[in-house]
Image 1 (cartoon, rainbow over the protein chains, first blue to last red):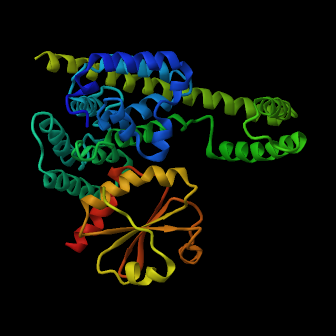
Image 2 (image 1 turned 120 degrees about the vertical axis):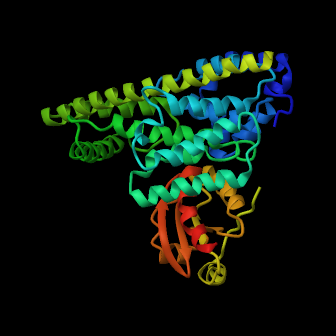
Image 3 (image 1 turned 180 degrees about the horizontal axis):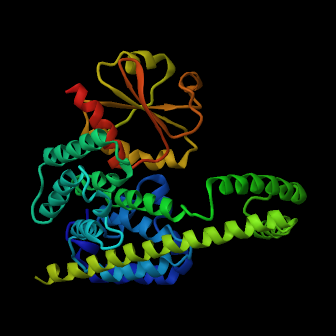
Length: 291
Length: 111
């Protein structure tokens, strides 16, 4: 925990971290990523004067990216977090923003279902937790009620997952921001890849062809040298040639590329919005610090 | 932090199959990144459901007989055991929300 709020209440520490991100540039496209893989981003964040709640949420917001602009996002996000801010409060505000979002809102798939009331109980607890601690048993009861409803209805559990993931004390379970992000992204990812023009059969045919051509390319290359960019470029060039080998294969490749680009664009739009939401919540925390 | 212990083949019957509590078994491997990434979530869940549901780990490379018995083809794979029977099985990384949904079903029975 940072004790005196964000950056330990020290503006110099904030500026040093932002300068470090700017200096390192592309290296920071993977900021905190090794710690995420080791499961300890909270420890690393604490070393930089950040609360683990922020430490767990920033990496998924920043690194699940096709365009390698994570460094730009990290700088903007860190700029937005006020020195001395209540960082768990920023994450809680982001949860509430996610619930109410007009397009991607977590409340939307639950509206009119028998899960709605139990989910709203959890959202009310998140609201309440912004001003006072919540007894652990109330989180537990709220989770149990939503889980029980989910079992009764047989609705897709994915729609309740982000809400169940919020229903914890963020001080003792600071990684929940990453869980909410992940649970929110799952259905977005699935919807982005659901298409009238790219079926499951297409995906299987593409996968089988990819495996076949990849084996041919590897056989042509010979001994693999891990991490060799020249060899990887050679592999990609061979694959391009193989994909254009006959009209049917070339068509399958073009269709898959078009589908992937369309899906990436849908996910990128969502990701840009959830990043914007985080920055807005962080900026709003400045008012609380000023007060 | 709540310690989650690895179970060896000769302990499995006592600690898992004959346990009075439901046992959530995490089949993992030391080389598996997603398995490591799951550990903080499992530790949080273990703390939350302490005294109601046990969590143990099985290293599939060190204990291949257990992995074979339960047909473990990939890691992480999780099996909720109760009364010596595999009651629920899930694979891959999971949020605390998904874990809680599973645990609530079995914690209710234990209470």
